[in-house]
Amino acid sequence: MTGKRLPPPLDEESLRDLALRHVTRFATSRGKLLTYLNRKLRERGWGGEQPADPEALADRFVELNYIDDAGYAVMKSASLGRRGYGARRVEEELRAAGIAEGDREQADAQTRKDAWSAADRFARRKRVGPYATAPLDQKQREKAIAAFLRAGHDYAVARRWVDAAPGADMAEE
Image 1: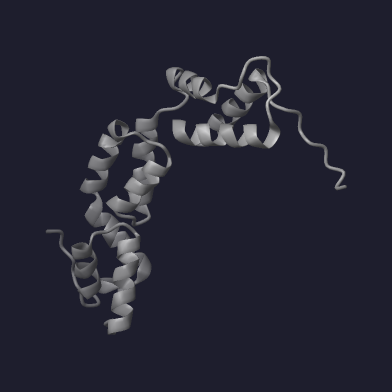
Image 2 (image 1 turned 90 degrees about the vertical axis):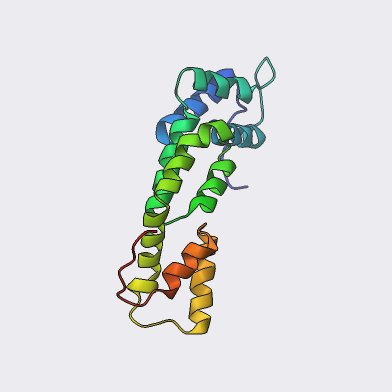
């Protein structure tokens, strides 16, 4: 026995309090809030009079503008772009967060607009292409291209950056 007391099962008020605390602490989407609430329900159980309805609670938070999936998508895509991730990786992250296609339009447009600068940041961080100290051998080149692809950039962009000579001036096409 660990001596740890288990928290009591959730009811309507405690579930709402958990949800409210979560959205005040973290930037979140409706899908991520639902995942969190369902996990808490599995961990602690339900002791309320009515059946648990995390969907209705998440919908209410959307109505109250505590959650804005479109705003979350723009914020998350900008954050990933600043870290050097490409469109495919951003799309995967937004899909995992439960962002609907309609809520991603502005984020997708921003990601396309910033694709070149994101690739530049990624090349700088990985020290390849114009940021390398010496040309890459074949094995290093393949690894660098694979890293670009995992980061969500397309193959043509990856090749262009990796094949650039150290110190080269890269201009967007």
